[in-house]
Length: 456
Ligand code: NDP
Image (cartoon, rainbow, N blue to C red; front, side, top):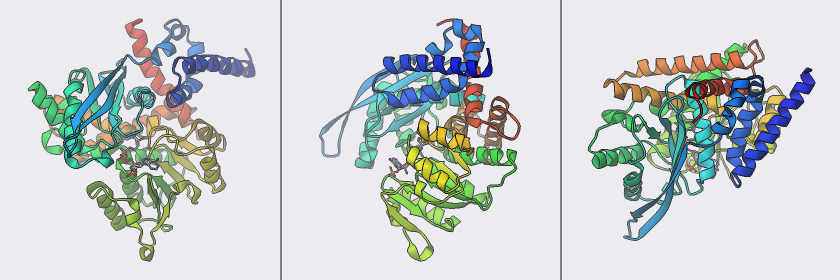
């Protein structure tokens, strides 16, 4: 078969498969989008490999092992009874116990959690650590809750969740709306309910009860670490580049800290209300003040505006209309659409790195990649967080604690290896397709394990 005919054959097979996935998962556009990103890259491998087709690997990979839905009933500060819905999606355990965060937002849905669990399966595979994929969450808006309400909610949620998790079964962690405070409440309740101190049942714990050094920073640091590898591979530098970052949460703030430490000019951070813009780049003092504002005082980014010191606040604006060399979307899914991509391209953006999970729409991603932008997909770019969660589990299992430098060194090694995998599967040479490379490398790891186990 000629190259063109083969391309058409792959595209047709991919379209047929995706039509089936869309029909079987109605009203779950994020999930179908995540599947389509993988399928676009791996369909040629599946068509070339009779064993993959006979084992129906793709069909099996897009069905979660199980989804657990449960009610969370708790008490508000005013004594009223509150009812929320929570889920745990245990997606794929071919490479290890299910592993993935818990998300608390008012808008979370089973479809979003399925997309995140699917994505997590392949991200975890890229780390090379023994972790399967899962995700969970609840339709709670913690910003509308007092600290005591968050605590009671976490305890009520664990009242059910503890039946479904365990160091060898499923190991949750944080995600949007779930940070160290919530993990503390969840872990405390797990210990009370089970009478077992199984440190490695949850990751992202406090340092005094089994948490790992560098876990807080790991995702954002890892994002910049992979970016540095990719830039160096292509003979470019980060120092002096204008970096636009969205979000002002865990991933965004640590990516900003690391990028600035590497000499980049971090020109934006944002939250759901607007963007803080420093045309000359935030200085370390300003970044530290924003971190305190967002993480310790629960403030809004608007409060960081300081025209005299070069910080403007742009209400209801995203960072993507501002000129930048590198874009790091680190807030939510689908925040860069085709229009935002067009603006970034107009300004000559050279690299886009997905710090958040699937922050770039399929259409926008295609435009950016076809325009020759260095595009680092979330699976690879934000894998540093779960990698250090994996290292936290290891430390818990062997009952030890590694110091900051040791964990950071291991994180760097993992990100270096992920880069090498992307290069090896993404065409090699000086024009690496990181999107294809990450998807194929991750797929092959999961596929080989599933094949070895036989159907099931
Ligand atoms: P956080 O809850 O710490 O921060 C999320 C940030 O995004 C907040 O600043 C929030 O603003 C902002 N935000 C939320 N909605 C919007 C919106 N519609 N437009 C603009 N900004 C918005 O979450 P994380 O930093 O932990 O996670 C961010 C992303 O990274 C998610 O996609 C997550 O799945 C992914 N991720 C996180 C990992 C981790 O280790 N934490 C690991 C791998 C991936 P506001 O303050 O207004 O709510």
